[in-house]
Length: 206
Ligand SMILES: Nc1nc2c(ncn2[C@@H]2O[C@H](COP(=O)(O)OP(=O)(O)O)[C@@H](O)[C@H]2O)c(=O)[nH]1
Ligand SMILES: Nc1ncnc2c1ncn2[C@@H]1O[C@H](COP(=O)(O)OP(=O)(O)O)[C@@H](O)[C@H]1O
Image (cartoon, rainbow, N blue to C red; front, side, top):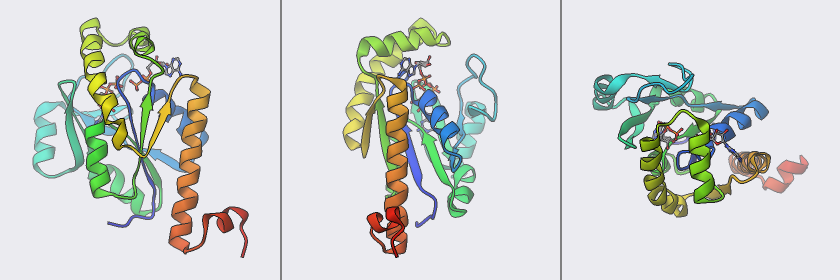
């Protein structure tokens, strides 16, 4: 399946900073569009239907999955999450670059469907910092934090299957790392499409 738009997948354990980093990246890069996932979980804090997620509930989610409406979906921390075909297919076909913020299970499914997708794993600088960020975020119950910290150990082990690993210690450095990955992929992909070396493209040589 060849689509002109690039596909970037960002995954990380809860609390590592993926939502904040993707938000900052989108503010710096007008060509990037984020995919809004569907989920069965209830909204958290200030989250709004159609902004952070399409909050559809379990019955509707499973009905959508049964109709094949997701490119990928997974159960994560006891809730269902999925990327709808309708949400990204047209954008990719129109050449837009799309960012998916999903878990490692979804990332590996996407890589199967779109081999040219770029998988980026965000790591926290330490377990203590991860726990601190989750509790400081203030919208996740202590028992949910504990569950996500347990899951994080297995999730982090999946980073080996990703194309890039970004350690989110200093936020601005991690944003710059993401920008660099996106820029390098655009050069490489454009060169492939035009059968020209990325160097010539970068220097705009004939
Ligand atoms: N497979 C998959 N995972 C998703 C999707 N949307 C969100 N997730 C993941 O579900 C997990 C929980 O997300 P969320 O409930 O927002 O908690 P957070 O990780 O603390 O922001 C995170 O790892 C997300 O990356 C999706 O469409 N598909
Ligand atoms: N580099 C960083 N240093 C300190 N705090 C951070 C950093 N990156 C993110 N945070 C904070 O950590 C918390 C979790 O970030 P968030 O983007 O919600 O993570 P995720 O989407 O991976 O669950 C938020 O309060 C966020 O502001």
